Length: 250
Length: 271
Ligand SMILES: Nc1ncnc2c1ncn2[C@@H]1O[C@H](COP(=O)(O)OP(=O)(O)O)[C@@H](O)[C@H]1O
Ligand SMILES: [Mg+2]
Image (cartoon, rainbow over all chains, first blue to last red; front, side, top):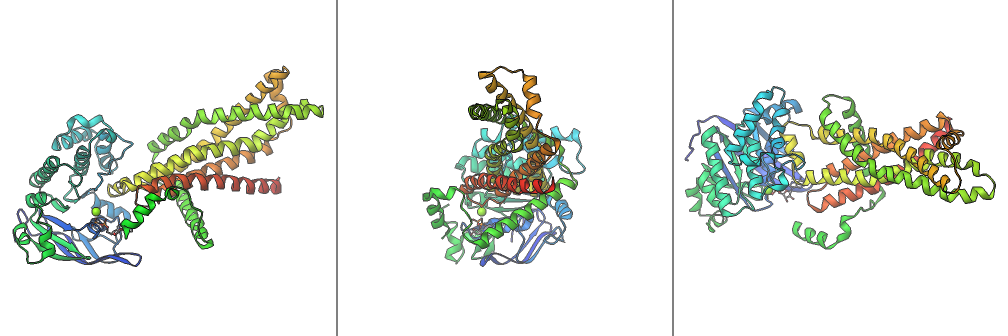
């Protein structure tokens, strides 16, 4: 397997993860280990529970069964303050961007930082400028989210995610709903972040060119389980029709 | 399956409106959940960390921005109430009682209740829609993962604001209503403002005013709690924003009336 940049430390370990809503079981049994610096792409049809996996990892949803270890610590049962310590090392890019629409771009970016107990006020402005430069949107700093296009919102959301220098970034469909050119830009941005900061990433996407560009490993989710795992080239030639189906449009 | 329910929801515009709980069981469930939510708010109000800046912002958004609406409401209540009671009281030769009758009605009942209902319409729906859309667009989750307690930041600040601002607004509405009454009296007779006010307060004691003010704190609290509850617990689809706003208004208006009834009974027992 081709683990570019991975150095073997497991930073995220999911075992026996099961998640049900009432009687409806979304995830049956998920096993996954991600090493430091690795980029994993998660494929699967809509509604198979990809977002649910991400939300379980960050603790927005409580798993019905199973364990999730982040940086070697069992995350699910931690008290809220300990959870927050780990959360600040994880970035989450929401599917909708989730920008706070009552705040300007600057306030959006500052929000996660000023709420950390140890932040320095003098660092704030340079940090905002740097994050916006990373996503090439320095002009947007005083705009409201409603004034931004879909692609700009995603980029600002990514900038906000980067404000706390996360070691792991979870991306929920970072390019969905964007035109091919903007999608490509975002994919390159993800790649750049990876190289620049050596972050570990888990990316949910339907965007095969993006997956091809960024993925060290691709996993395919089907009916609550991981049915295939491998490099892009391996999965593209998979025997399994279902798996191959994801690659046929590209 | 999920797609089917979506389309039928879109076709059925009634879905956007408040629905009364279908069974006694779900009614009790709702009451229980609201009570738990209210208790959680109370706990949040008195326990650190406190969100001072955001609370101040909500005072402005919720209190200051309702000022105009409440003032107009108060003025018209006072004016019309007086205009309508003057002929009746004249028939009994009791026109000198007009100021105190108006003051009594306005301060004890009409001022608090009507202002609160208007406030529930403006602020209850506003909070329901705002938090509902934040929920649907994952902004509340985003706060949570960035280490902020969204309940404290969004809910507690708003509940504090409604609880403290509504009583002030009601006092304002009452004063303006009395002024409206003064103008109405002056359309037919002429009195000085001073005399009108002295007459107004001649039959009102502190023991009338205190319960009337106390109940407005409760109105404010329940409007805030219900608005936040509906928004914070909105479902995942976009239509749920409308439902949250609408349900917030219906339930909080109903609560205002119910609390008023209970408080009036309580007051008459205590005093
Ligand atoms: N908070 C929730 N409450 C109830 N059901 C949920 C919740 N989150 C997700 N689901 C259900 O779980 C399934 C998987 O959802 P999701 O993870 O969003 O799919 P996707 O793979 O497209 O991201 C869907 O059927 C959805 O209805
Ligand atoms: Mg999803």
